[in-house]
Image (cartoon, rainbow, N blue to C red):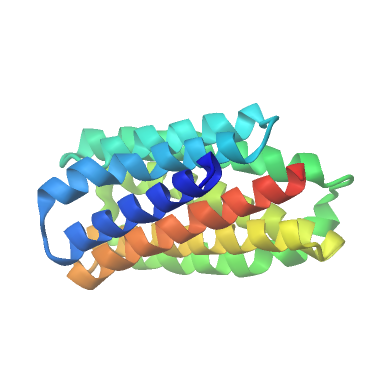
Length: 216
């Protein structure tokens, strides 16, 4: 068994154990294995390709720090976790934009509609409970909506497998973050906690698959 397969199995293993920890409310599993999800994905990416894109590696590292920060309770940890993921998404946006040969304001209007609608509905639902976090959440929501928009634009232009994988990753990421926001600020639910992590793992993996495919 080569290093890539071992890294993939480790990624699946730690992801499942983290989700099991959430399902059965076993904090030690979550604290131990959640940080290892992105850690293992970094190794999987490194072992999958002889040459790596540094922006993607940095985005994964930022995601790792975001995961660690969000393990802890408190508004300060949430804000710093949000900032870490914000910069990760900015790098995802850069990666996708670099794939697109030409972007005009007109070309992004249609791809932006579904993401802006979801963003608007989410903010309208949460605005009364966000308080001082309203502006940070709006900024983060706009950034991840832009990630979805440029991914959709890239897919519309190329119809390629790698652009489809990135789009799926972006959409699932938005679902994960929207669920996290609803669970934290609107309607807490154990099911939402499970859904947040399951969709997060899938989103990161689809983005990874797109990154491996574009290099190959």
